[in-house]
Image (cartoon, rainbow, N blue to C red; front, side):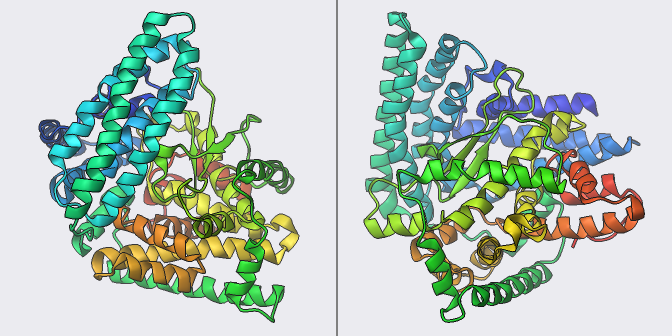
Length: 547
């Protein structure tokens, strides 16, 4: 099994060298993705051969750890084949093309894993691959959904300034006195930036008027994605019923909590009044930084989970290439990174070309109580704690595979768990903020299913976010549009519910030996693998359902 695992990931990193760099394997730094149609067809055949090999291996008796890893990798292969062969997103989604150049370069410049001049040479090598990559987009994309092209335009336009300003400024320092090296960079970067400008123009003038494609993937493919990526086999009708019931509970709790804050106002008005105290464009990042220490102090005082390191993440603006509708994100060094330690907690600022109302609605989403909940999710004890445990994950597969119900489910679970444990001394505004974030995820759960299996439009989804999750109109539209290209973004709430059930079953099994800290420590040390697999590891005698 170990040789297959090595072969699978070697093939994956050759296909996606940007991913190789991100996990800390720097032999891939000089390469950038080949996204030509020929390369996609070659990858499909490679995956089929890997699947044939894995099927043969799984017919032989294996150790329990190998059985789990084999099932995870089989799901990964089937999920990728579903995407490439059936859904064919490489033919439908230009976002995947225009977002990659910035990601490929940023991964080389933001972490000091090698001397700057060496990393600059890798940057130059990747820059030379940007024009062919964007030409492949023009050759491959056919009649995408309007929503995909519209977002791709934002990413491409934002990436141009990232290349011309951020990357160019870094490269000048990295080259130092080496004028020849810097000249080589300027030529490659100029060509890359121009290709992004051309791509942005092509998206707006040629592709957007012809973007009439359908984003819905249908019930059968939706169910397959959940099975392959998350090991979730719950029938969709029951899955939807679970999500709607959870939304109804959170909605009721939100209304009741709002009444305790101010019974003279409607729940939406109460939330709006709380969001009146929001950061400005200038204070957004400093305000986010202020949330960290109080949360860490609470975790230690309450023995919520072990914090393996005192190194803090760097809190900064979301890079332009990554602004695809998300409000915050955690970007950490890979599990095989031996030198660089920089972890980035990104917060998305308003776009410069937004009008004053759009900016205000965006910034309201970062009001003080919600900002605390976001930091719990992204950093402590959410994603950053997961990262701090990554080097302890027991197998290569568990170090390198992450699924949404675990990674995002854990971070979303952390929000509710921290409030239940008494964070901020039961302040109802924190409870309301946590419920506001929960309703957002609950709405994603329902909207994702409805967009892809029930014929909903993005506009219908946006209305649902406004009415059921109390989202500002601009943010509601961003959220619904995300569901068009991220069908199974129900994994936040779905994962949270699975973790709560696992915690309760674990508590019953451990009896007097149970502690919440012990459960949390054991959970995060398994890696971000499907929760069904985590259940088998933590409760080997338990064969119950995950929901």
